[in-house]
Amino acid sequence: MTHMPARRRRPAAPVACMPERDAFDLWLGESLRAAFDKVTAEPIPEDLLRMIEEDRAERERLRRKRRGEE
Image 1 (cartoon, rainbow, N blue to C red):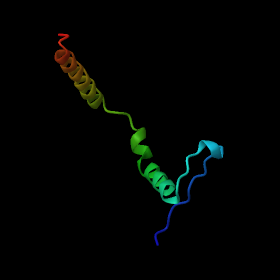
Image 2: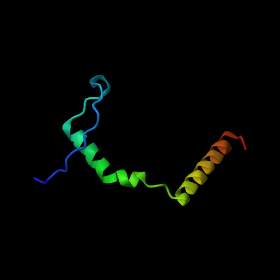
Image 3: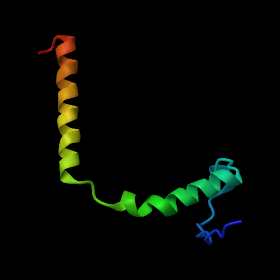
Image 4: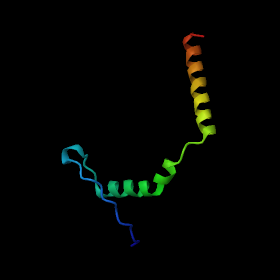
């Protein structure tokens, strides 16, 4: 069996607020956070943000055209 790193403890939430989860879901969530938290904390490149905005504008233009608003 491989060695698993120790889990970080989080403050306990009231039981009524927490959905029931099994051990695998908890392990998977913690493992994914440990592997990808640094990546998700990185800033989004400006070029990617520009492409997203351009695509959003193009989709909106196409929607308006289909509705006959242009």
